[in-house]
Length: 447
Image 1 (cartoon, rainbow, N blue to C red):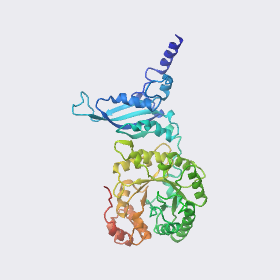
Image 2 (image 1 turned 60 degrees about the vertical axis):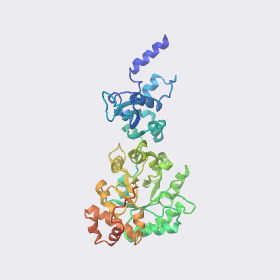
Image 3 (image 1 turned 135 degrees about the vertical axis):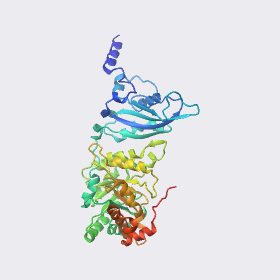
Image 4 (image 1 turned 90 degrees about the vertical axis):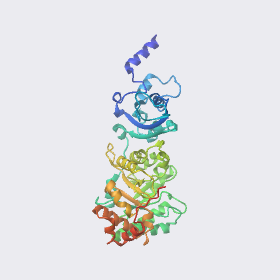
């Protein structure tokens, strides 16, 4: 009798719906929950509200069978709740006989207490085991302000790049990745660095395919490139940031980053998804690393490329890179070039990087992938000046060499900012004119 009385008191205390894995949006505290939005396609016979509850329990307090420890109190504090099941088309009176599968937008609210300040736990919670549900994709996450407050985000952010370079924010920045991607000795890299810097590249980065290698030591690169940076500054009056790739096995990456900083590195780069977002977050949160950090997007396609599975790109490339402290991130360019990316996905990712998000500074977008002067105006018109434009082959493959290639890109940037047609500007700028002769049309490598 005593046991029954205690259970009744628990239910009265909790309320009749508090321990249920389903709710309406108005019945939960949005500021204590992470709201995940999914797309799912399933057999017409499935009741998606029921399946959603199964997933909500699986990802929080329970498993495939009832267990004694999953008490009403535990559920009330930690179970996820289905708060929206929206079918498209939204059948009301009957499902047509010829329909075999139905598509839904599903929203589940996860208690923020289950995640706290951990990105690995956020991923595990919202798309862990259920990532293996077929035809199921995470589209978006609404992260409450209380959770955002756990994250420091970018240390420098968009504004910081201009500040470190000593520039006014009057134009987009130009980034060059040294090509070839890998396999070259330090002497070759130093020559290409000097040429690109003399041509006007604001930032020069390692390709993601070269880090600290036996054939080309990262610390030695930093020492040589920083020496060249000073010489170029004395000649041109313009500084150059070198984002040395410190991607490495853990914890060795952190030691490498500190050795590069001690050697004079004025910026860093990391393949943040390959090493894990929290590894990059640790670099960004390290007070002894007081330089901007560029995140590279490699491995992102494994998360988002399938239209029917995985995690949408605006989360992986946008929200998560910003949460883990990227001051800038390389993005696939959506308006030409070799990257395969739908433009509205690109713009959604840019918004996640730059629009207000708690107290986090914005992360600078860096579109890249087959960009030549012919692409610049489209980038500026779509995104504005608060951007870093990345070009590798479009600089190094210029007929007159990397110095001229960089100048051509800078001239294209100036034309775009001034609102002058590229063809007109090219008439009075030799490097741009030659580049237009090679890449007069926007490159398009899409298959």
